[in-house]
Amino acid sequence: MLVLLESASGFYIFKVNDESKLNQPANLYKEFENAKKATKLLSFECNQKFKDATDALTSTTALIEGKLSKRLKKFLSKKVLSVYSDETLAVADAKLAGSIKEKLDIQCVTSNAVQELMTCIRIHLPELVPDWNEDEEAAMQLGLSHGLGRYKLKFTLLDDLDKELNNYIMRAKEWYGWHFPELSKIIADNIAYIKTVMAIGMRTNAVNTDLSEIIPEDIEAQVKELAEVSMGTEIAPEDLINIQALCQNCLDLHEYRAQLLEYLKNRMMAVAPNLTILVGELVGARLISHAGSLLNLAKHPASTVQILGAEKALFRALKTKHDTPKYGLIYHAQLITQANTKLKGKMSRMLAAKAALAIRVDALGEESSNELGLQNRAKLETQLKFLEEGNIRRISGTGRQQRQQHPQKFENKSKVMIYKDGADSTFVPKNKRKTFDQNQDDEATPSTSTPAVQDDPKINQIRIRTGVLKRSIKEKQSYEQELIRESERLNKMRELQKDEYEINKQQEIINETAMLLPDCQKRITAAYHDLQQLVEGMGEDYAENEIYLAAKALLQESSIP
Image 1: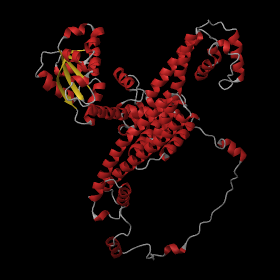
Image 2: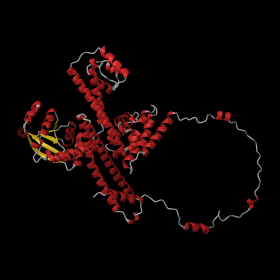
Image 3: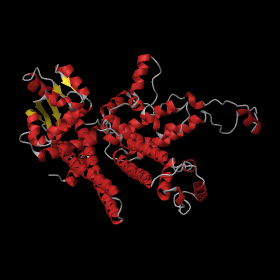
Image 4: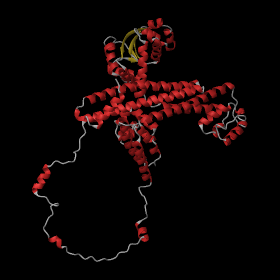
Protein backbone atom coordinates (compact mmCIF):
# COMPACT_ATOMS: atom_id res chain seq x y z
CA MET A 1 0.00 0.00 0.00
CA LEU A 2 1.16 3.51 -0.86
CA VAL A 3 0.36 6.62 1.17
CA LEU A 4 -0.14 10.07 -0.42
CA LEU A 5 0.74 12.90 1.96
CA GLU A 6 0.59 16.61 1.18
CA SER A 7 2.42 19.44 2.95
CA ALA A 8 3.14 23.11 2.35
CA SER A 9 6.24 22.25 0.31
CA GLY A 10 4.87 19.48 -1.94
CA PHE A 11 3.51 15.92 -2.25
CA TYR A 12 5.13 12.80 -0.75
CA ILE A 13 4.65 9.07 -1.41
CA PHE A 14 5.39 6.49 1.31
CA LYS A 15 5.11 2.70 1.21
CA VAL A 16 3.66 0.70 4.09
CA ASN A 17 5.91 -2.30 4.73
CA ASP A 18 3.51 -4.12 7.08
CA GLU A 19 -0.18 -3.55 6.27
CA SER A 20 -1.33 -5.76 9.15
CA LYS A 21 -0.51 -2.95 11.57
CA LEU A 22 -3.37 -0.92 10.09
CA ASN A 23 -5.96 -3.42 11.29
CA GLN A 24 -5.84 -1.87 14.78
CA PRO A 25 -5.96 1.92 14.38
CA ALA A 26 -6.19 2.50 18.13
CA ASN A 27 -2.74 0.96 18.69
CA LEU A 28 -1.11 2.45 15.61
CA TYR A 29 0.56 5.24 17.59
CA LYS A 30 2.76 2.64 19.32
CA GLU A 31 4.53 1.99 16.01
CA PHE A 32 5.52 5.67 15.88
CA GLU A 33 6.95 6.11 19.38
CA ASN A 34 10.34 6.91 17.89
CA ALA A 35 11.93 7.44 14.50
CA LYS A 36 13.37 3.91 14.26
CA LYS A 37 9.97 2.25 14.57
CA ALA A 38 8.52 4.70 12.06
CA THR A 39 11.20 3.91 9.46
CA LYS A 40 10.54 0.17 9.89
CA LEU A 41 6.85 0.55 9.16
CA LEU A 42 7.19 3.15 6.38
CA SER A 43 9.71 3.74 3.63
CA PHE A 44 10.05 6.94 1.61
CA GLU A 45 9.54 6.44 -2.15
CA CYS A 46 9.38 9.79 -3.96
CA ASN A 47 8.21 13.39 -3.69
CA GLN A 48 7.18 16.36 -5.85
CA LYS A 49 7.89 19.86 -4.55
CA PHE A 50 5.99 23.00 -5.53
CA LYS A 51 7.73 25.51 -7.79
CA ASP A 52 6.64 28.62 -5.89
CA ALA A 53 3.95 30.00 -3.61
CA THR A 54 1.48 30.40 -6.49
CA ASP A 55 1.82 26.74 -7.43
CA ALA A 56 1.37 25.74 -3.78
CA LEU A 57 -1.74 27.91 -3.48
CA THR A 58 -3.31 26.46 -6.64
CA SER A 59 -2.67 22.86 -5.58
CA THR A 60 -3.84 23.41 -2.01
CA THR A 61 -7.11 25.07 -3.03
CA ALA A 62 -7.78 22.15 -5.37
CA LEU A 63 -7.21 19.75 -2.45
CA ILE A 64 -9.57 21.74 -0.23
CA GLU A 65 -12.31 21.39 -2.85
CA GLY A 66 -11.54 17.69 -3.36
CA LYS A 67 -10.26 18.16 -6.92
CA LEU A 68 -7.22 16.75 -8.70
CA SER A 69 -4.78 19.54 -9.61
CA LYS A 70 -2.55 19.42 -12.68
CA ARG A 71 0.60 19.12 -10.56
CA LEU A 72 -0.76 16.14 -8.59
CA LYS A 73 -2.16 14.45 -11.71
CA LYS A 74 1.19 14.67 -13.48
CA PHE A 75 3.05 13.43 -10.39
CA LEU A 76 0.79 10.39 -9.91
CA SER A 77 0.86 9.54 -13.61
CA LYS A 78 4.67 9.43 -13.71
CA LYS A 79 5.52 8.01 -10.29
CA VAL A 80 2.59 5.75 -9.36
CA LEU A 81 1.02 4.47 -12.59
CA SER A 82 4.32 3.67 -14.25
CA VAL A 83 6.03 1.98 -11.24
CA TYR A 84 3.34 0.92 -8.75
CA SER A 85 0.42 0.05 -11.01
CA ASP A 86 -0.83 -2.80 -8.76
CA GLU A 87 -0.60 -0.92 -5.45
CA THR A 88 -3.51 0.77 -3.68
CA LEU A 89 -3.17 4.42 -2.67
CA ALA A 90 -4.17 5.68 0.80
CA VAL A 91 -5.67 9.19 0.61
CA ALA A 92 -6.97 11.35 3.48
CA ASP A 93 -9.92 12.97 1.63
CA ALA A 94 -12.73 10.82 0.20
CA LYS A 95 -13.57 13.36 -2.55
CA LEU A 96 -9.95 13.48 -3.67
CA ALA A 97 -9.85 9.67 -3.70
CA GLY A 98 -12.90 9.61 -5.97
CA SER A 99 -11.31 12.12 -8.35
CA ILE A 100 -8.06 10.11 -8.54
CA LYS A 101 -9.93 6.87 -9.19
CA GLU A 102 -12.11 8.48 -11.86
CA LYS A 103 -9.35 10.24 -13.83
CA LEU A 104 -6.32 7.94 -13.29
CA ASP A 105 -8.00 4.60 -12.48
CA ILE A 106 -5.93 4.11 -9.31
CA GLN A 107 -7.48 2.12 -6.46
CA CYS A 108 -7.73 4.46 -3.45
CA VAL A 109 -8.45 3.77 0.23
CA THR A 110 -9.87 6.12 2.88
CA SER A 111 -10.65 4.98 6.44
CA ASN A 112 -10.07 5.82 10.09
CA ALA A 113 -6.82 3.85 10.00
CA VAL A 114 -5.60 6.00 7.11
CA GLN A 115 -6.44 9.18 9.04
CA GLU A 116 -4.53 7.92 12.09
CA LEU A 117 -1.61 6.92 9.87
CA MET A 118 -1.48 10.42 8.34
CA THR A 119 -1.34 11.99 11.79
CA CYS A 120 1.51 9.72 12.86
CA ILE A 121 3.46 10.40 9.66
CA ARG A 122 3.29 14.17 10.16
CA ILE A 123 4.86 13.78 13.61
CA HIS A 124 7.98 12.08 12.21
CA LEU A 125 8.01 13.71 8.77
CA PRO A 126 11.51 15.27 9.17
CA GLU A 127 12.97 11.84 10.01
CA LEU A 128 11.12 9.96 7.26
CA VAL A 129 11.95 12.35 4.37
CA PRO A 130 15.63 12.62 3.41
CA ASP A 131 17.05 16.12 2.86
CA TRP A 132 14.21 17.68 4.85
CA ASN A 133 14.57 21.47 5.17
CA GLU A 134 12.73 22.84 8.20
CA ASP A 135 13.28 26.50 7.28
CA GLU A 136 11.93 26.00 3.78
CA GLU A 137 8.85 24.24 5.13
CA ALA A 138 8.18 27.05 7.63
CA ALA A 139 8.51 29.70 4.93
CA MET A 140 6.16 27.81 2.61
CA GLN A 141 3.64 27.36 5.42
CA LEU A 142 3.66 31.09 6.14
CA GLY A 143 3.26 32.05 2.48
CA LEU A 144 0.56 29.44 1.89
CA SER A 145 -1.45 30.47 4.94
CA HIS A 146 -1.18 34.09 3.85
CA GLY A 147 -2.37 33.26 0.34
CA LEU A 148 -5.28 31.15 1.56
CA GLY A 149 -6.33 33.78 4.05
CA ARG A 150 -6.24 36.58 1.49
CA TYR A 151 -7.72 35.02 -1.62
CA LYS A 152 -9.40 31.67 -1.10
CA LEU A 153 -10.89 31.29 2.38
CA LYS A 154 -14.53 32.30 2.74
CA PHE A 155 -15.90 34.84 5.13
CA THR A 156 -17.16 32.52 7.88
CA LEU A 157 -15.27 33.55 11.01
CA LEU A 158 -17.80 36.12 12.21
CA ASP A 159 -20.74 33.82 11.45
CA ASP A 160 -19.02 30.93 13.22
CA LEU A 161 -18.37 33.14 16.24
CA ASP A 162 -22.07 34.03 16.40
CA LYS A 163 -23.06 30.37 16.29
CA GLU A 164 -20.53 29.32 18.91
CA LEU A 165 -21.45 32.25 21.15
CA ASN A 166 -25.16 31.37 20.97
CA ASN A 167 -24.40 27.73 21.77
CA TYR A 168 -22.24 28.68 24.76
CA ILE A 169 -24.86 31.07 26.14
CA MET A 170 -27.64 28.49 25.73
CA ARG A 171 -25.52 25.91 27.54
CA ALA A 172 -24.73 28.36 30.35
CA LYS A 173 -28.44 29.16 30.79
CA GLU A 174 -29.25 25.47 30.82
CA TRP A 175 -26.63 24.66 33.48
CA TYR A 176 -27.30 27.64 35.74
CA GLY A 177 -31.05 27.16 35.24
CA TRP A 178 -30.94 24.09 37.49
CA HIS A 179 -29.78 26.35 40.30
CA PHE A 180 -31.66 29.62 39.56
CA PRO A 181 -34.28 29.03 36.79
CA GLU A 182 -36.11 32.34 37.34
CA LEU A 183 -33.10 34.44 36.31
CA SER A 184 -33.44 33.73 32.57
CA LYS A 185 -37.08 34.94 32.63
CA ILE A 186 -36.16 38.26 34.25
CA ILE A 187 -33.01 39.15 32.25
CA ALA A 188 -33.57 38.88 28.50
CA ASP A 189 -30.18 40.19 27.36
CA ASN A 190 -27.68 37.34 27.03
CA ILE A 191 -24.54 39.29 27.97
CA ALA A 192 -26.27 40.88 30.96
CA TYR A 193 -27.34 37.38 32.05
CA ILE A 194 -23.77 36.06 31.80
CA LYS A 195 -22.37 39.03 33.75
CA THR A 196 -25.04 38.59 36.44
CA VAL A 197 -24.11 34.91 36.83
CA MET A 198 -20.44 35.86 37.15
CA ALA A 199 -21.26 38.48 39.79
CA ILE A 200 -23.72 36.43 41.89
CA GLY A 201 -22.31 32.93 41.84
CA MET A 202 -24.52 31.07 44.29
CA ARG A 203 -28.03 32.51 44.45
CA THR A 204 -27.69 32.99 48.19
CA ASN A 205 -25.15 35.74 47.48
CA ALA A 206 -27.61 37.77 45.38
CA VAL A 207 -28.87 39.81 48.36
CA ASN A 208 -25.41 41.18 49.15
CA THR A 209 -24.29 41.66 45.53
CA ASP A 210 -24.35 45.05 43.80
CA LEU A 211 -25.75 44.64 40.26
CA SER A 212 -26.40 48.31 39.48
CA GLU A 213 -23.67 48.42 36.80
CA ILE A 214 -25.14 45.41 34.96
CA ILE A 215 -28.94 45.70 35.11
CA PRO A 216 -31.47 48.45 36.03
CA GLU A 217 -32.59 48.94 39.62
CA ASP A 218 -36.10 47.51 39.19
CA ILE A 219 -34.77 44.31 37.62
CA GLU A 220 -32.08 44.10 40.32
CA ALA A 221 -34.79 44.21 42.99
CA GLN A 222 -36.69 41.40 41.26
CA VAL A 223 -33.54 39.27 41.03
CA LYS A 224 -32.82 39.64 44.74
CA GLU A 225 -36.42 38.94 45.65
CA LEU A 226 -36.70 35.79 43.54
CA ALA A 227 -33.29 34.53 44.65
CA GLU A 228 -34.69 34.03 48.17
CA VAL A 229 -37.73 32.00 47.03
CA SER A 230 -36.21 30.24 44.02
CA MET A 231 -37.32 26.69 43.28
CA GLY A 232 -33.90 25.69 41.88
CA THR A 233 -31.77 22.91 43.27
CA GLU A 234 -28.49 23.25 45.09
CA ILE A 235 -25.22 22.82 43.18
CA ALA A 236 -21.71 21.96 44.31
CA PRO A 237 -18.86 24.51 44.28
CA GLU A 238 -17.18 22.48 41.53
CA ASP A 239 -20.28 22.90 39.36
CA LEU A 240 -20.25 26.64 39.92
CA ILE A 241 -16.56 26.81 38.92
CA ASN A 242 -17.33 25.09 35.61
CA ILE A 243 -20.36 27.30 34.98
CA GLN A 244 -18.39 30.48 35.62
CA ALA A 245 -15.56 29.22 33.40
CA LEU A 246 -18.09 28.77 30.60
CA CYS A 247 -19.47 32.27 31.27
CA GLN A 248 -15.96 33.71 31.09
CA ASN A 249 -15.48 32.02 27.71
CA CYS A 250 -18.73 33.63 26.55
CA LEU A 251 -17.50 37.08 27.59
CA ASP A 252 -14.15 36.54 25.88
CA LEU A 253 -15.86 35.44 22.67
CA HIS A 254 -18.21 38.44 22.81
CA GLU A 255 -15.31 40.86 23.21
CA TYR A 256 -13.33 39.17 20.45
CA ARG A 257 -16.37 39.36 18.16
CA ALA A 258 -16.66 43.10 18.83
CA GLN A 259 -12.97 43.57 17.97
CA LEU A 260 -13.35 41.49 14.82
CA LEU A 261 -16.41 43.47 13.73
CA GLU A 262 -14.56 46.76 14.25
CA TYR A 263 -11.59 45.38 12.32
CA LEU A 264 -13.92 44.32 9.49
CA LYS A 265 -15.54 47.76 9.33
CA ASN A 266 -12.18 49.51 9.04
CA ARG A 267 -10.91 47.06 6.42
CA MET A 268 -14.07 47.28 4.30
CA MET A 269 -14.02 51.09 4.35
CA ALA A 270 -10.40 50.98 3.15
CA VAL A 271 -10.94 48.33 0.44
CA ALA A 272 -14.50 48.98 -0.84
CA PRO A 273 -15.92 52.21 0.62
CA ASN A 274 -18.73 52.68 -1.94
CA LEU A 275 -19.97 49.10 -1.64
CA THR A 276 -19.85 49.35 2.17
CA ILE A 277 -22.04 52.45 2.19
CA LEU A 278 -24.62 50.82 -0.10
CA VAL A 279 -25.01 47.34 1.44
CA GLY A 280 -23.07 47.46 4.72
CA GLU A 281 -19.78 45.93 5.76
CA LEU A 282 -21.13 42.45 6.56
CA VAL A 283 -23.04 41.99 3.30
CA GLY A 284 -20.18 43.53 1.33
CA ALA A 285 -17.65 41.18 2.92
CA ARG A 286 -19.87 38.17 2.18
CA LEU A 287 -20.21 39.23 -1.47
CA ILE A 288 -16.44 39.66 -1.86
CA SER A 289 -15.80 36.34 -0.13
CA HIS A 290 -18.34 34.52 -2.29
CA ALA A 291 -16.78 35.87 -5.50
CA GLY A 292 -13.21 35.20 -4.33
CA SER A 293 -11.89 38.74 -4.52
CA LEU A 294 -13.03 42.30 -5.20
CA LEU A 295 -11.73 42.13 -8.77
CA ASN A 296 -13.69 38.94 -9.48
CA LEU A 297 -16.81 40.54 -8.03
CA ALA A 298 -16.32 43.56 -10.32
CA LYS A 299 -16.51 41.26 -13.35
CA HIS A 300 -20.05 40.16 -12.47
CA PRO A 301 -23.04 42.04 -13.96
CA ALA A 302 -25.76 43.51 -11.75
CA SER A 303 -28.07 40.53 -12.36
CA THR A 304 -25.43 38.15 -10.98
CA VAL A 305 -24.72 40.39 -7.96
CA GLN A 306 -28.46 40.37 -7.21
CA ILE A 307 -28.73 36.56 -6.87
CA LEU A 308 -25.18 35.85 -5.69
CA GLY A 309 -25.45 33.26 -2.93
CA ALA A 310 -28.75 31.77 -4.18
CA GLU A 311 -27.29 29.55 -6.89
CA LYS A 312 -29.00 26.38 -5.67
CA ALA A 313 -32.41 28.04 -5.64
CA LEU A 314 -31.77 29.50 -9.11
CA PHE A 315 -30.86 26.20 -10.75
CA ARG A 316 -33.65 24.39 -8.92
CA ALA A 317 -36.13 26.98 -10.24
CA LEU A 318 -34.77 26.64 -13.78
CA LYS A 319 -34.99 22.86 -13.59
CA THR A 320 -38.54 22.79 -12.23
CA LYS A 321 -39.64 25.79 -14.36
CA HIS A 322 -40.67 27.85 -11.35
CA ASP A 323 -40.02 31.51 -10.53
CA THR A 324 -36.35 32.33 -10.12
CA PRO A 325 -35.13 33.92 -6.85
CA LYS A 326 -35.11 37.69 -6.61
CA TYR A 327 -32.19 38.08 -4.21
CA GLY A 328 -29.32 36.22 -2.58
CA LEU A 329 -26.79 37.57 -0.08
CA ILE A 330 -27.90 41.12 -0.89
CA TYR A 331 -31.24 40.41 0.85
CA HIS A 332 -29.70 41.30 4.24
CA ALA A 333 -28.85 44.87 3.14
CA GLN A 334 -30.66 47.58 5.10
CA LEU A 335 -32.35 49.11 2.05
CA ILE A 336 -34.04 45.78 1.25
CA THR A 337 -34.98 44.74 4.79
CA GLN A 338 -36.72 48.05 5.49
CA ALA A 339 -38.76 47.86 2.26
CA ASN A 340 -42.26 46.39 2.05
CA THR A 341 -42.73 42.78 1.02
CA LYS A 342 -44.07 43.74 -2.40
CA LEU A 343 -41.16 46.11 -3.04
CA LYS A 344 -38.28 43.85 -1.95
CA GLY A 345 -37.75 42.38 -5.42
CA LYS A 346 -37.77 45.76 -7.14
CA MET A 347 -35.52 47.26 -4.46
CA SER A 348 -33.04 44.38 -4.73
CA ARG A 349 -32.82 44.93 -8.50
CA MET A 350 -32.16 48.65 -8.12
CA LEU A 351 -29.67 48.10 -5.30
CA ALA A 352 -27.81 45.44 -7.30
CA ALA A 353 -27.47 47.83 -10.25
CA LYS A 354 -26.00 50.59 -8.07
CA ALA A 355 -23.83 48.08 -6.17
CA ALA A 356 -22.33 46.76 -9.42
CA LEU A 357 -21.24 50.30 -10.33
CA ALA A 358 -19.84 50.87 -6.84
CA ILE A 359 -17.87 47.61 -6.97
CA ARG A 360 -16.24 48.56 -10.27
CA VAL A 361 -15.33 51.99 -8.97
CA ASP A 362 -13.79 50.45 -5.82
CA ALA A 363 -11.86 47.83 -7.78
CA LEU A 364 -10.74 49.82 -10.81
CA GLY A 365 -11.10 53.49 -9.85
CA GLU A 366 -8.11 55.76 -9.62
CA GLU A 367 -9.18 57.40 -6.36
CA SER A 368 -10.87 55.59 -3.50
CA SER A 369 -13.65 57.91 -2.32
CA ASN A 370 -17.17 57.20 -1.12
CA GLU A 371 -18.95 59.99 -3.04
CA LEU A 372 -20.55 57.61 -5.52
CA GLY A 373 -21.87 55.40 -2.74
CA LEU A 374 -23.37 58.33 -0.85
CA GLN A 375 -25.08 59.69 -3.97
CA ASN A 376 -26.51 56.32 -4.99
CA ARG A 377 -27.73 55.53 -1.49
CA ALA A 378 -29.54 58.88 -1.30
CA LYS A 379 -31.18 58.19 -4.69
CA LEU A 380 -32.26 54.71 -3.60
CA GLU A 381 -33.75 55.97 -0.34
CA THR A 382 -35.67 58.66 -2.26
CA GLN A 383 -36.91 56.11 -4.78
CA LEU A 384 -37.98 53.73 -1.99
CA LYS A 385 -39.94 56.49 -0.28
CA PHE A 386 -41.59 57.38 -3.59
CA LEU A 387 -42.59 53.74 -4.19
CA GLU A 388 -43.98 53.29 -0.69
CA GLU A 389 -46.23 56.35 -1.15
CA GLY A 390 -47.96 54.62 -4.04
CA ASN A 391 -46.57 56.81 -6.84
CA ILE A 392 -49.13 59.55 -5.96
CA ARG A 393 -48.15 62.93 -4.61
CA ARG A 394 -50.83 65.50 -3.91
CA ILE A 395 -49.34 68.91 -4.49
CA SER A 396 -52.12 71.54 -4.43
CA GLY A 397 -55.48 69.74 -4.58
CA THR A 398 -57.64 68.61 -7.49
CA GLY A 399 -58.62 70.64 -10.55
CA ARG A 400 -62.16 71.22 -9.33
CA GLN A 401 -60.90 72.66 -6.04
CA GLN A 402 -58.57 74.96 -7.95
CA ARG A 403 -61.42 76.23 -10.11
CA GLN A 404 -63.56 76.89 -7.05
CA GLN A 405 -60.81 78.73 -5.21
CA HIS A 406 -59.51 80.71 -8.23
CA PRO A 407 -62.33 81.19 -10.76
CA GLN A 408 -61.20 82.52 -14.14
CA LYS A 409 -63.05 85.30 -16.03
CA PHE A 410 -63.19 85.11 -19.80
CA GLU A 411 -63.59 88.32 -21.81
CA ASN A 412 -64.09 88.58 -25.55
CA LYS A 413 -61.46 90.87 -27.09
CA SER A 414 -61.65 91.71 -30.78
CA LYS A 415 -58.42 91.78 -32.74
CA VAL A 416 -57.92 94.04 -35.82
CA MET A 417 -55.42 92.70 -38.35
CA ILE A 418 -53.39 95.44 -40.12
CA TYR A 419 -51.68 94.80 -43.43
CA LYS A 420 -47.90 95.44 -43.46
CA ASP A 421 -46.71 97.31 -46.52
CA GLY A 422 -43.13 96.23 -45.98
CA ALA A 423 -44.06 92.68 -46.89
CA ASP A 424 -44.28 93.69 -50.57
CA SER A 425 -40.52 94.42 -50.74
CA THR A 426 -38.31 91.85 -52.54
CA PHE A 427 -35.04 93.13 -51.06
CA VAL A 428 -33.13 90.44 -49.10
CA PRO A 429 -30.51 91.56 -46.56
CA LYS A 430 -27.00 90.22 -46.99
CA ASN A 431 -26.89 88.76 -43.50
CA LYS A 432 -29.82 86.44 -44.30
CA ARG A 433 -28.72 85.00 -47.62
CA LYS A 434 -25.35 84.15 -49.07
CA THR A 435 -24.22 83.74 -52.64
CA PHE A 436 -22.91 80.51 -54.05
CA ASP A 437 -19.32 81.81 -53.93
CA GLN A 438 -19.62 82.71 -50.27
CA ASN A 439 -20.87 79.21 -49.41
CA GLN A 440 -17.85 77.70 -51.18
CA ASP A 441 -15.48 80.01 -49.27
CA ASP A 442 -17.08 79.00 -45.94
CA GLU A 443 -16.68 75.32 -46.76
CA ALA A 444 -13.01 75.80 -47.68
CA THR A 445 -12.23 77.70 -44.47
CA PRO A 446 -11.32 75.26 -41.64
CA SER A 447 -13.38 75.40 -38.49
CA THR A 448 -11.79 77.03 -35.50
CA SER A 449 -13.51 74.68 -33.03
CA THR A 450 -11.38 71.83 -31.70
CA PRO A 451 -12.54 68.41 -32.89
CA ALA A 452 -13.32 65.72 -30.31
CA VAL A 453 -10.22 63.80 -29.53
CA GLN A 454 -10.69 60.08 -29.25
CA ASP A 455 -9.15 58.19 -26.40
CA ASP A 456 -5.67 56.88 -27.09
CA PRO A 457 -5.13 53.22 -25.98
CA LYS A 458 -1.68 54.11 -24.62
CA ILE A 459 -3.17 56.88 -22.48
CA ASN A 460 -5.88 54.48 -21.25
CA GLN A 461 -3.22 51.97 -20.23
CA ILE A 462 -1.29 54.67 -18.36
CA ARG A 463 -4.50 55.77 -16.61
CA ILE A 464 -5.22 52.19 -15.48
CA ARG A 465 -1.65 51.52 -14.31
CA THR A 466 -1.57 54.83 -12.44
CA GLY A 467 -4.77 53.92 -10.62
CA VAL A 468 -3.38 50.48 -9.69
CA LEU A 469 -0.21 52.04 -8.26
CA LYS A 470 -2.18 54.66 -6.31
CA ARG A 471 -4.50 52.04 -4.79
CA SER A 472 -1.59 49.78 -3.84
CA ILE A 473 0.25 52.63 -2.13
CA LYS A 474 -2.90 53.71 -0.28
CA GLU A 475 -3.61 50.14 0.82
CA LYS A 476 -0.09 49.81 2.22
CA GLN A 477 -0.47 53.10 4.08
CA SER A 478 -3.77 51.91 5.60
CA TYR A 479 -2.09 48.68 6.76
CA GLU A 480 0.77 50.65 8.33
CA GLN A 481 -1.65 52.96 10.14
CA GLU A 482 -3.64 49.97 11.32
CA LEU A 483 -0.44 48.31 12.57
CA ILE A 484 0.43 51.41 14.60
CA ARG A 485 -3.10 51.65 16.00
CA GLU A 486 -3.28 47.99 16.98
CA SER A 487 0.21 48.12 18.55
CA GLU A 488 -0.86 51.07 20.71
CA ARG A 489 -3.92 49.12 21.77
CA LEU A 490 -1.71 46.16 22.69
CA ASN A 491 0.53 48.38 24.83
CA LYS A 492 -2.51 49.75 26.65
CA MET A 493 -3.78 46.23 27.31
CA ARG A 494 -0.42 45.29 28.78
CA GLU A 495 -0.36 48.41 30.94
CA LEU A 496 -3.85 47.62 32.25
CA GLN A 497 -2.77 43.99 32.83
CA LYS A 498 -5.54 42.49 30.76
CA ASP A 499 -6.13 38.77 30.48
CA GLU A 500 -3.44 36.78 28.66
CA TYR A 501 -6.04 35.43 26.24
CA GLU A 502 -7.01 38.93 25.10
CA ILE A 503 -3.36 39.94 24.73
CA ASN A 504 -2.66 36.87 22.58
CA LYS A 505 -5.65 37.60 20.35
CA GLN A 506 -4.51 41.19 19.92
CA GLN A 507 -1.01 39.96 19.06
CA GLU A 508 -2.51 37.65 16.42
CA ILE A 509 -4.27 40.63 14.81
CA ILE A 510 -0.97 42.55 14.74
CA ASN A 511 0.87 39.59 13.21
CA GLU A 512 -1.79 39.18 10.55
CA THR A 513 -1.59 42.85 9.61
CA ALA A 514 2.21 42.74 9.52
CA MET A 515 2.13 39.77 7.13
CA LEU A 516 0.13 41.83 4.63
CA LEU A 517 2.84 44.49 4.24
CA PRO A 518 5.38 42.41 2.21
CA ASP A 519 2.69 41.38 -0.26
CA CYS A 520 1.60 45.02 -0.65
CA GLN A 521 5.19 46.05 -1.30
CA LYS A 522 5.52 43.39 -4.00
CA ARG A 523 2.38 44.61 -5.75
CA ILE A 524 3.57 48.23 -5.47
CA THR A 525 6.92 47.31 -7.02
CA ALA A 526 5.27 45.39 -9.87
CA ALA A 527 2.80 48.22 -10.56
CA TYR A 528 5.64 50.78 -10.43
CA HIS A 529 7.75 48.94 -13.00
CA ASP A 530 4.77 48.37 -15.31
CA LEU A 531 3.90 52.07 -15.22
CA GLN A 532 7.55 53.07 -15.66
CA GLN A 533 7.86 50.84 -18.73
CA LEU A 534 4.74 52.38 -20.28
CA VAL A 535 5.87 55.95 -19.58
CA GLU A 536 9.34 55.36 -21.02
CA GLY A 537 7.80 53.90 -24.19
CA MET A 538 5.75 57.05 -24.90
CA GLY A 539 6.97 59.54 -27.49
CA GLU A 540 7.35 63.31 -27.39
CA ASP A 541 3.78 63.76 -28.71
CA TYR A 542 2.45 63.03 -25.22
CA ALA A 543 4.74 65.45 -23.38
CA GLU A 544 1.88 67.89 -22.67
CA ASN A 545 -0.79 65.30 -21.85
CA GLU A 546 -2.18 65.65 -18.30
CA ILE A 547 -2.45 61.89 -17.66
CA TYR A 548 1.14 61.38 -18.89
CA LEU A 549 2.44 64.17 -16.64
CA ALA A 550 0.48 62.83 -13.64
CA ALA A 551 2.00 59.38 -14.18
CA LYS A 552 5.53 60.82 -14.31
CA ALA A 553 4.87 62.80 -11.13
CA LEU A 554 3.62 59.66 -9.36
CA LEU A 555 6.73 57.75 -10.42
CA GLN A 556 8.96 60.51 -9.06
CA GLU A 557 7.05 60.54 -5.74
CA SER A 558 7.20 56.75 -5.37
CA SER A 559 10.87 56.38 -6.43
CA ILE A 560 11.09 52.58 -6.13
CA PRO A 561 14.45 51.13 -7.29
